[in-house]
Image (cartoon, rainbow, N blue to C red; front, side):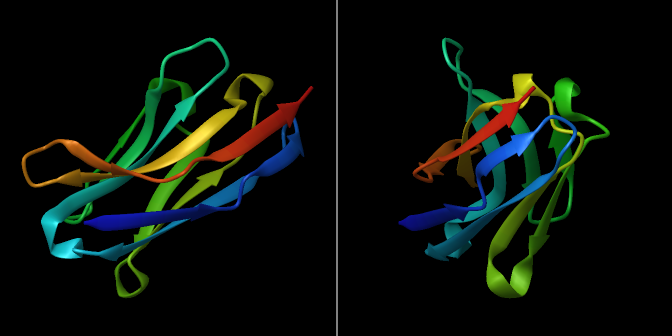
Length: 117
């Protein structure tokens, strides 16, 4: 099992920035990527950004150029730096971990990000 603990959400004005953190613990050997998904009110959950343990990244088109995902291997922690936030970025953000079968097998509890206009 892998446990994911998120932090860093909050309320920010449009144009502001936030950094989310996700610390993983447990059977780290069983996963090969971590990332962030979000669910906005009335919408389905969507991928925001993913980083593999080999360093590859993937971003949703809507956040490219504004969000950066990174990781600290020593701390088993992934970060999402969010700049130039927009009201449409308002959502619950979930940390996720992908297993070696390519499945998102673990989820964090979610952290609320609210961007006011």
